[in-house]
Length: 140
Image (cartoon, rainbow, N blue to C red):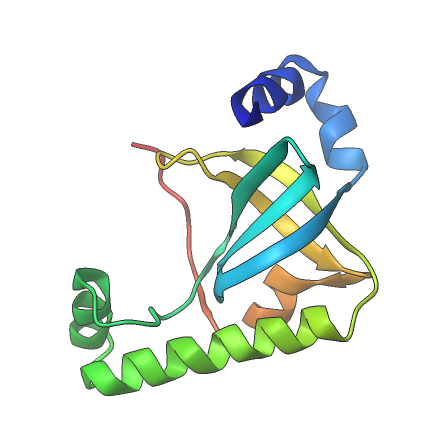
């Protein structure tokens, strides 16, 4: 069902998508840059917050790479990743509404987007407060 929704969005006039945020209900905050949402009972999907890169929350391969590239210990990467997740959870907890601006789809079939909790641009907040690093998405 999600694929049908994405086909519908992609078939629309793109400026219409960027002018209005799509309201969603947050189901889960996986980490600082990925959340699971639903539009209705049939449309549940993940959103990858575009333009940011947060540290991983577990000792997976990518966390080792983040530790190496940033000259950190693996435990520091995971601790920062978990801390960032808590920040996003608190931002959501203190909001009444969630929405996102659809920006595309990544290679893992996640929607790419700018997420808003009420009027707060979460992506920008995380960058401005140096909670996450900037990330330029490269489509393979």
